[in-house]
Amino acid sequence: MEESGLVRLTVLARDQPGELIRILKPLSEHNANIQGVFHDHSRDGDKTLATGSVPVEITFTFDPMMSEDDKKQRIEQIKKDMAGSKIQILNISIEMEETTKTEHVILIGPIFETDIHDSIVQITGTGARIADMQAAIASADTPQSTVMFKIEYEKDEVQAALLKKLSVLSKQKKLKYITS
Image 1: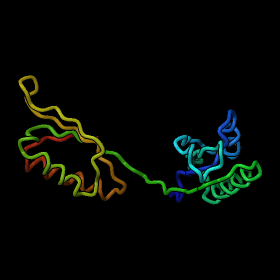
Image 2: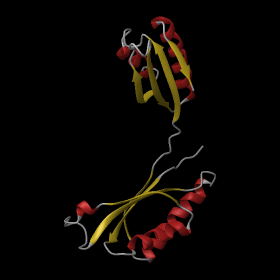
Image 3: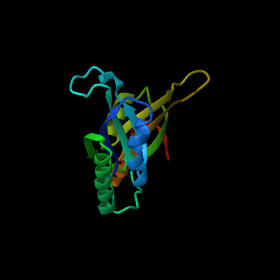
């Protein structure tokens, strides 16, 4: 299992052409996989920063098959290379990588008539999160209401509890459900 995931590095960059390439070079040389780069130009007037400089946040990962020791060594080498290039590191952190799993669930039937709020409370009571929800409410063209949930969770036990809850909920409220 991976201990480290996303590395978040904030450096102080000169606000001039070519600076971003210079900053990204040590990351490239050590096989970092860039996930995002954010320039914070809103801090231009910040007196705590050197004139003509801007904070740049870079998020990156390494190959997940790489050992934790190798990742740590590469991060240390990136820090040394940046220091050698006079790139000031403001902050560096490694975020624990979560293994979020997703389940799509479609409920069909009298979902609104049987209190959709209660159904949501029961689903989230399993420890799962509802990340997205789309609904088609019954009408002349659509004889039954349909609600699709995108449900996220981290642990397999939550998935088991979720599937059990969906079975009970569907019987209790006379709903049909489909999972993916």
